[in-house]
Image (cartoon, rainbow, N blue to C red; front, side, top):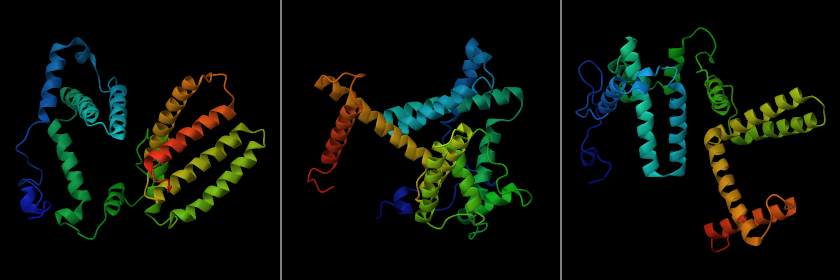
Length: 282
C-alpha cells in the first residue's frame, strides 16, 4: 500500500466539513493558547495593560524570528518561535473578545470560509476557477487590479505582490530571460545616474533596478525576500569565517587592505566549493 494513499493516511479526500460548511476537529489543542492568554490577562498586570496596538511590535518581531528559525532549519527553534507567534495571535484574539469586536470562533470561521471560497476545485464549487480569479472577484470588478493590496508590506514583498497583480491581467514577461533585458537597461540607467549630481535621480534609478531584480526572481519561481535572506545569511557566515581566518593569520581588522581581504574571501569561497564537490568538478 502506498504511503500516500488515503488508507495509509487514515483519511479520505473529502474535506472535514460540518453541516454548517465549517471545518470540524476533535482536537482543541490550539484553544489552550487562548485559555493561557485569558489567564495571563487576569493575573498579570503587564499582560492586562496590553492593547492590540501595543502588541503590534511584538507580533512583528515574533513573525520575523519565526522566519529566521525556518531559514536556519532548526526544528527546536522553529517550534519555540511558532509558540511565541501563536501567543501573539492569541493575544490579539483575546483583546478583541474583551472589546466585543470579534471572537475566536469568528476568526476561524472567516479563515475557513475564505479557504473554501478560494479553492473551488477542491470543494467542488467551480473546478475550473483559479485561486487568482477568485481573489480578483473578491476585490470587485470596479477599480484597479491593485486595489486592496495590504498596507505596511515590506518593499520587496510589495514589489512581488504588485507584479503578481498586474500579471493576472497579462501585463508580464513570459519568461525570466525576457526580464533580464529590462534588468540590463536599468543597470545602464543607474550607471548614468551615478555620473550626475542628483541624489534623487540616483535613488529613483536604484529603485527601478531593485524592482527589475524582483521581477526576474519572481518569473524564475523564486521570491526576492527569500533570496535576499539567503544571501544575507551566506554573506554573514562567510564574513565571520573571514574574521576568524584573519585573526589566525595575524591580519589586522581593521587595517588590512581590500586586496588582502579579497584574497581571504576568495579562499573561503574556494573552500566552500571544494567541500560541496570534493571531486573538483565544479
